[in-house]
Amino acid sequence: MSIEIRNVSKHFGNFQALGDVSLDIHSGELVALLGPSGCGKTTLLRIIAGLETADQGSILFSGEDTTDVHVRERQVGFVFQHYALFRHMTVFENVAFGLRMKPRNQRPSEAQIREKVHSLLNLVQLDWLADRFPSQLSGGQRQRIALARALAVEPKVLLLDEPFGALDAKVRKELRRWLRRLHEDLNVTSIFVTHDQEEALEVADRVVLMNQGKVEQIGSPQQVWDHPASPFVYGFLGDVNLFHGRAHEGEVQLEGIRIDSPEHAGAKDAKAFAYVRPHDFDVQRYSPGAEGIAAQLVRAIVIGPTARLELIPEEQKQTSKGSDEGLIEVQISSQQYKDMGLREGDMLVLTPKNVRVFVEEGAGI
Image 1 (tube, one colour):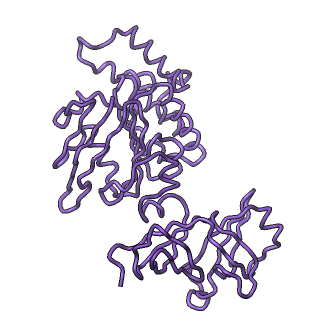
Image 2: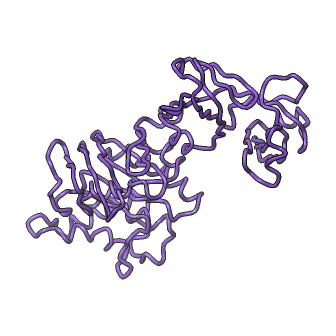
Image 3: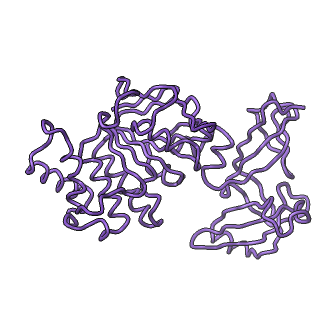
């Protein structure tokens, strides 16, 4: 089932949770709504489910307007962060609950319910826990049971709100892989909310980045990572270093370096922001006259194959003592770190290999 979100806005008092959001989700697609707390992603999910009402705009399922259709009639499965399992019911009874609540003329027989529930418990690989109670399960197991319960009523749309947010990192990683495989098997249109960039990029077919009630960018994980559409997206997706400078007629002057930026050929002495990811630096020992950003290595964290370096630019050493302000994060291989014989206190020269420049509109002087 495809979902069309058209010009949806929502206020809570004076706070605008969503502002004129439009979005198309294709049938069978797994889409992540990604963004910081308070950006509107959960509000949008709840409006799609019918748990909240939009102030304006419409929601269409496969071309049919469902804006005023009650949540019970939308054929939506919903999985919350905190499982919401019935504690007094066994795993089997929790999964069977939705089937038993169907109107009498639609309700399966007890034999059909039993077959369906065991089939779903096999699907989530937990059939052996059918007679246990939620309190006897781990967090990861409870979340998989919650998903089985949502799937029992054969929803046309599956909605997941921070489904793995309450779990530890190792379990989250295992469940992410499992959810991706499960989605490929079931092919049900699914939308999940997360603030975890890695989770969204690893699991989703497409990522919808949201900020302050607006959609900043929509694209495949590779597209949003390689071609961030705004400074917000660049800063939100993974670690990044921000440099300030000036752009003038296709050239950007940063801290100690000049960068060609032909896409900003029309800029006239405009304020510019340049973003460089930690792994996108060439690192050399400092020598007088070397072109690049001169910086002192203040901390090195070497774990496994990666060395993470924290450096203070030479020009900021005097003004940022005891502060992380202006700190540059660089990532190189542990082997390169060892081969260069680096030590904390060494002076290095950093040359960005890949830079993304944004020019502030109307900033020309």
